[in-house]
Amino acid sequence: MARGKPEKQRLDTLLVERGLCASREKARARIMAGDVLVDGAPATKAGAQISADAAVRLKNAECEFVSRGGHKLAAALDAFALDVSGLHALDAGASTGGFTDCLLQRGAASVTALDVGYGQLDLRLRNDPRVTVMERFNARHAAPGDFSRAFDIVTVDVSFISLDKVLPALARALAPQGALVALVKPQFEAGRERVGKGGVVRDPAVHEQVLENAAHAAHESGLRPLDAAFSPITGPKGNIEFLLLARPETGFAHVPELPPEKIREVVRQAHQALNA
Image (cartoon, rainbow, N blue to C red):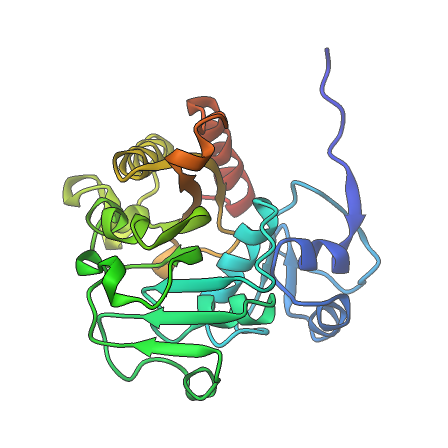
């Protein structure tokens, strides 16, 4: 059977659904400012009908969050249909607070912002009573006793370390019905010999292997990998990045695991959308 043409929708709506802007009003403002590119060309009309598989980017991706990371997590929450309203979250690798900011804007009751560094978290977030700051703390050494509660959602955005080093500890911080969302960065997962010139991973086969390895690391940590998506915003130097959803094995053993064909499809979509 022939495949139908991709569905189209308004550009301002598409920006919100992909997590690039928090509202249609803000999306329209970015469009009017000339900050939105569709398939590499500036877009000027908020109501323009855009194909669902079009590559849509912002010229400057600071937008609504304190860092670009907020847009990556927003895209994951939308892709995985996760509602964090009223939830208690752990943000591992908080840095300046993009993920923390996103969680709060999406209604999280509290966020524990954990990072191995010091003094990086945005001052506004640092002063927010919903935020608990844990600095100079290595996520790989975290234990349940380090926290006052088990978390409803754990988000992970770490650099210069592989996910298989931190997921075992973070999985133990998760509540039985909780969710873990990890940003998968191929440049830190692939191994030095598979990272290309300038620190960029371009090979789709390497991306597939990295995602499979991340899913395996989650499984080995007592989690069940359930879904994956690609980040609509690339990492430093243009690296394509991915997002992985996993939940505790004990509570979700009945839910089908992330299949290899879904990983291949996510990688294909990423390369098509981001023109890798």
